[in-house]
Image (cartoon, rainbow, N blue to C red; front, side, top):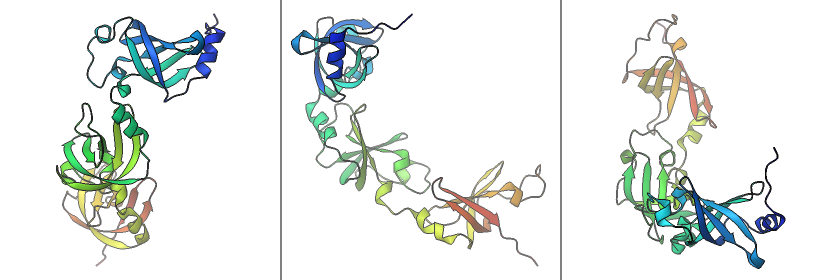
Length: 273
């Protein structure tokens, strides 16, 4: 059975739309937790749109039908267009706060800005960027994801930053879904791995930070560079556990620095009598 195509007038209207544009809609029904709307077009043209529950409002919406009953008017932003199905994916929550929407639209990746750490969580760090508008639900608009905190290994975000700390960060992207500006503290700092790449072939002394079934990890610099020494280099018997523990010091040779994968390969330096 062939897929039902939208009528020619609806197809023409869909082709006149673009992601990011604002449209006026009328709620006409519900499909599960999604709100189905009719998009108003010029010259009486119409198209169907769908707003998922999580895109209705920045605040939790337990009952979409109560939040936006049939006949309710909503302004929404176009997120995507399915021309085959004649359906427009929409978000109305981004239109609840015009100031925030405008701010996100002016964000330029790569620009460096200043801000203040407001709160720290296992999933990331909120930072109030200078000049940002208030966020409807989050502690701040700026957000540092865990990998963007530091080039070097750390156990907890609190080991890198603290609430109230002033920071200089680099903008990564505007996240319209969460109403956030993803920023990086790491990218404002020199990558120690770049310097360490020049040390291939050198012999260094480091401390074992972790023992795993396939080898040991050794911290070889004060700024946190960690390399892997394979088990085969520690014992001739594959079934035998290496006689080493976390905290032991080892002398190793830097065999390879893989910058794209951020990996350091080490080999054991044996001292002969």
